[in-house]
Structure formats: C-alpha cells, structure tokens
Image (tube, rainbow, N blue to C red; front, top):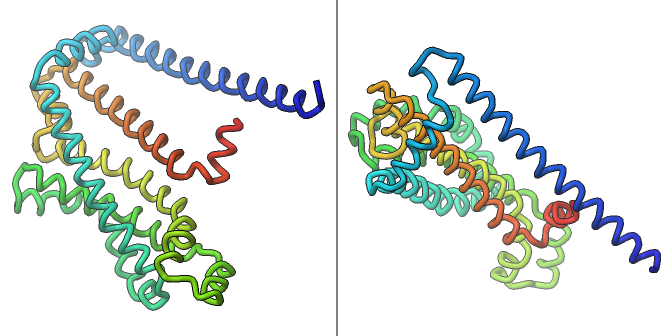
Length: 272
C-alpha cells in the first residue's frame, strides 16, 4: 500500500468514526429528551403533561383521519406560498439594490426601521382587515420573513470579486454572461444563508399566526386543544410542528448541498 492509499484509508476511517459519534450523540440527546418528558408526565399533576405513549397514541389516531392531513396541509400550503413570495420578491430586489451604491444608501434607513417591527405587532391590524383567514396569516408571514432574505441579498450583491468584474469589463464580456457566470454564482452562498433563515422564520410565523388568530392550521389546533384542556391532542400537534420543522430543515439542507455542491464548505462537510 502506498503512502497516498494509506492516507486515504486513515482519512476515511476517521470520517466514519466522526459520523458514528455524531449519530450516537443525536440518538442520545433524543433518548434523554424522551426520558425527561416521561419523568415530567409522572411527576406533574394529572392532565398537565401527557406521557410520550399517550401523545404518540393520540397522534397515531389523528394520522388516520382526513381532518389531520387537511390541517397539516393548511399550514404547509401557507408556508410554501409565503416562502415563494419572499424569495421571488426579496432576492431580485435585494440584488438590484445591492448592485447600486446610491440605492443601498437610500434604502438603508427604511429597511433598518421596518425590519425592527415585530410581525406579531401588526397581527391585530391585519386580523381586523382580513379576519382569521389564509390571507391574514400570509401577510403576517411575508412581512416578517422577507427581511433576512432581502438584506442578505443586498449583502450578496456587494460581495463580488472586484478583479473578476474589472476583467469582464476589460474583455467586454456580455452582460447576460457576466450575470449568470460570475455575479449570481458569487452571490449564491449569501442568498442561501438568507433563505435558510427566512425559511425557518416562515414556518415559525405561520404556526404562530394560526395560533394567535384562529386561522385554520396546526396553530389553531394547538390553541383549540389548549382551550378544551385536551393536553394529549395539544402535545400531538406540537410534536407535528417539530417534525415539520425537521423535515423542512432536512429538505433545505439537501437543496443547499445540491445548489452549492461546488462550494468549499460542502466539500469540507463531505470530508467530515
């Protein structure tokens, strides 16, 4: 065996060990959480916290009903529509503003002021206008989740390599080729960071808006179960919210690795 083969073998073994350790740690944290949950259910007064067995049994029963899947779809649909609107509006607008120094300086004060307004603070006004509807939740989610995508896109447009820009001008590279081959790929890592943050905020605001306003979805079911003191149903839908967050995070991680497969961070993750 050559030195290179030996080095590759050692690196592969080290990566496998780290992967096993990481998976074992994740399983251990999950097991510890279940133990703490079970201990709380038997220590607290009856009805305050259901046991994991009761919660999963309730969730299993709900999973067989059309109402459950309709509820989950209401939340997922609102989340997806809001994320698409934030992406379609925030990314092009942010790149356009970030490409112009005058536009960046002119809009900085406005953006800094508007993004500090909590989305929940405008919920009563939007609820008064639209009522507890899909449109109401959509407005609240978009107004809250668009800012990290927009601001990160502004920063992305300012991170271009000046040498590449000057070379493209010197060689009279066509504008379309410059945007698709130099400008956009250079901005993509920053855009994906904004999308990752915006995706999380979209999901949180969707469930929160449903919870506080009474619009159909997972949040409404949590509030309804709480009002009727149906703690197993409430915990079941809270668990659904957590599982939905894990699914969204996993899907985004896969998409990001595919889109940024050429980026150094993904190569380091693959090596690890």
